[in-house]
Length: 183
Ligand SMILES: [Zn+2]
Ligand SMILES: [Zn+2]
Image (cartoon, rainbow, N blue to C red):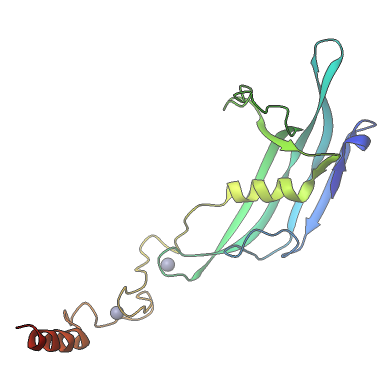
């Protein structure tokens, strides 16, 4: 859904949108499991700089919820993950803060983003919010044993004997060959 400045100049725009898995691209590692529901309101906020100059910002307030399947950082099994967040964001025209030290962006203020041209694509704003809401690393459970670094077995499901046989027979065979070659 494209939120147009031209329309916001007339009235605020309310939205209630649902995005099926695949509509918004979250990258190859993140699988969306259920539709992403979002609702909220976009409105124009005019910043006046002097008498003549004004900047048209878009304030985007709302909420979203959806669920994902992430992979466990240790054993690579998929882990269900639900997200639901409120947001209150301000989008300024791209280039507004160019050259400045982005003084206005401090932790205390609303989160600030930038839009380009005629408006803002809601999907882009949601993608960004979702990615911010997802953890960098997920584990399936606190005591996940992960994969064996030698044979790759999932140690939550089965045991392997790699830790017991301290030396892989293939390596000892190689060493014997090397010992013969070395003078
Ligand atoms: Zn795991
Ligand atoms: Zn193993």
